[in-house]
Image (cartoon, rainbow, N blue to C red; front, top):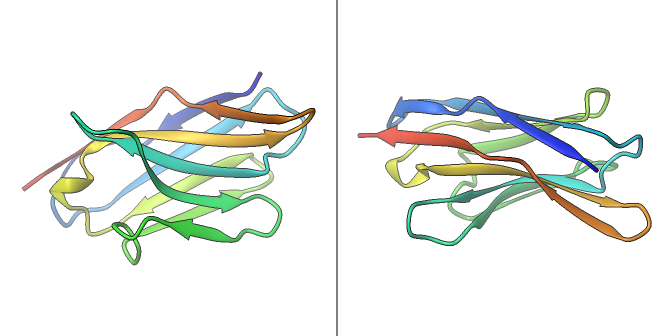
Length: 119
């Protein structure tokens, strides 16, 4: 069973930056892809960004393109999300996600970390 532990959330002002990190443990195999999703109050969870573990290709939601950057540290099994020029609408609980392909597709989630952007 994979454990995902997020860190780095907090309260910031609009225009500020934050860096989220997610550390994966519990598997010797590398993930297929890791990413971030978020859920704002009263809304469904939505995709933010993801990165493939082998080639490092990235994908972003249109709402964060040009402001957020996802990166990985293969040696530490960690994925980071650098969030710049934060807006009030970025306020949400951010969840780390990891997909492993072992004997099938295994989809794991972290507990979430709160990001609050005030104006």
